[in-house]
Length: 177
Image (cartoon, rainbow, N blue to C red; front, side, top):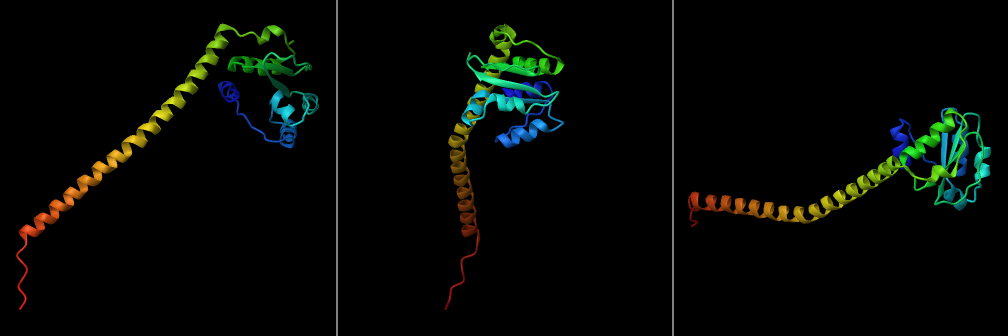
């Protein structure tokens, strides 16, 4: 969903695997937003406050919090988006952080009909794509062996017919004395 939201706003996500990579990325001048999962931070024994300390002027920090857990993170460019979220909710959090301070309220966690539509559409697209891939793979596993069998039999029949024609059309071998 992060990739979808960022690509819709013309941004390129950079996925990081360690706190050191996060620290370097947060200091890079071409990075305008850092999106982190509060759950991933907890598993890595990193506190949200330590991520906030990485911030520099102009850097937007977006924390993805699972469920409706209360997250007490405040700052001029700090946003909290509750999972599940829609692409438009994430874009709104990023853009509001870039354009100025916006207070985060509990009403943001509520989904609007358009946001739900985006979320449902993305989920349906994912399910259809996975189902189509599995159906194609199943068809290939069934059809390819049958097709190979038919092709091999046809080639054998052609070779046998060719050999039979040669045997009939050739003069008998000379008799040896």
